[in-house]
Length: 100
Image (cartoon, rainbow, N blue to C red):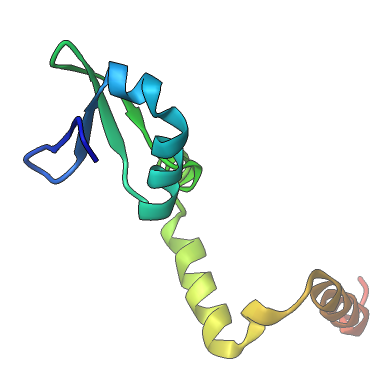
């Protein structure tokens, strides 16, 4: 894409003028390529455009314990259960526990 360059770390750098003129294309590019874009004004970095997936990942990273639970559920096949199935399993498990 014209009016773009790569930074030393491989991030795409664009001018604010180019970003304004091509915003829709840039949104698609960020989503399709899963890359962030640095937007410069007069050669100075001013903002970053990133996908919502990347934003959520950066704003609230998944704790290690949740990653471990996710891996375990995939290994056991539990990751394919629906909410209804999970609710049924919880209900059965609770009914089998002795009441205090």
